[in-house]
Image 1 (tube, rainbow, N blue to C red):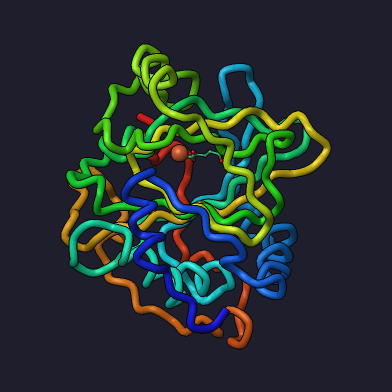
Image 2 (tube, rainbow, N blue to C red):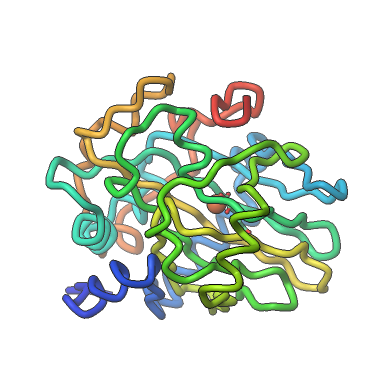
Length: 275
Ligand SMILES: O=C(O)CCC(=O)C(=O)O
Ligand SMILES: [Fe+2]
């Protein structure tokens, strides 16, 4: 996908709705490379941990901070990605990569996610400016209602931060406010084909159901931040280190190795946002 560029009307839709879907953000050839690593890379599996939902169902996830020169690192640093988030995030300081995670929602066992804003987590890391951050979900397998795709409530990024509390091992938004806004704004099931991307604002309310189907729902979620938006309670440095973009072709053309330990993976007990 050379010369990819978001248009001003896509940026306006993100600003209005709090999210933007870009179909075929990665090509099928790129997708195959990403799937191969997701399904078979030793480090990806070694560093995975389980997060329980309220009913005891588990989502497996692998989270890392610094993007390397493996296929995932090359995707998160690709020019198309850096340009897109640079257009959508508020502010003008450098684009940095906070973290990426591979969400592995397995058939029958993949857990649900309670209604939350990602800034409900990152507030605890003491990031001060949510609009200078963004999440990008890339579907590694198809995501639909049957296998627990993401659900969002349109325009909720304009509500500001809602109170969050613990809900099992997860952090969830105040149900009272969720109920009120469900009466007010549209709930959207974000069905994605593998290779599609969803850009969403840190204050957009979202959730997902457990995966009760026979097909896996795997996705990559990469989070970006501006260098100026310093977190005061976050041990990893990555969110304020400016990214050097790589050409879009790198993912397919550069010799890329396995995900290495240099990516500095998160151990579950170290996550400030889960404390
Ligand atoms: O993958 C999902 O269903 C939701 C994950 C999510 O919202 C998160 O990790 O913050
Ligand atoms: Fe989230």
